[in-house]
Length: 100
View 1: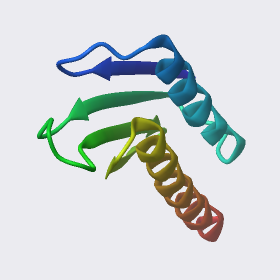
View 2 (view 1 turned 180 degrees about the horizontal axis):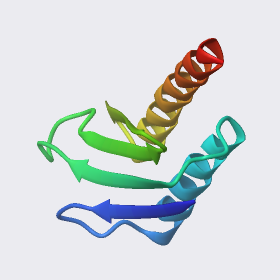
View 3 (view 1 turned 30 degrees about the vertical axis):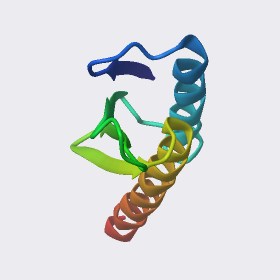
């Protein structure tokens, strides 16, 4: 799976990039045909709490799945966004199975 990570208006440290790659890579356990993933990291309102935003878009044949989460840390945001995508993948697979 091709994973592209883009930090907007800041430089993400290597530890964070590796953490996010591992999280997103785990989605392939649930669905084999994931083409790629785009991850965008943003900090909104630098002085406030829960200002770390992560947006993940994964491409699967015929469809794109998207999740965006905002939390206190990028790690927490990544956990929640990947979990949301896992649920979307599960729902998508159920629809595919119902067609067959």
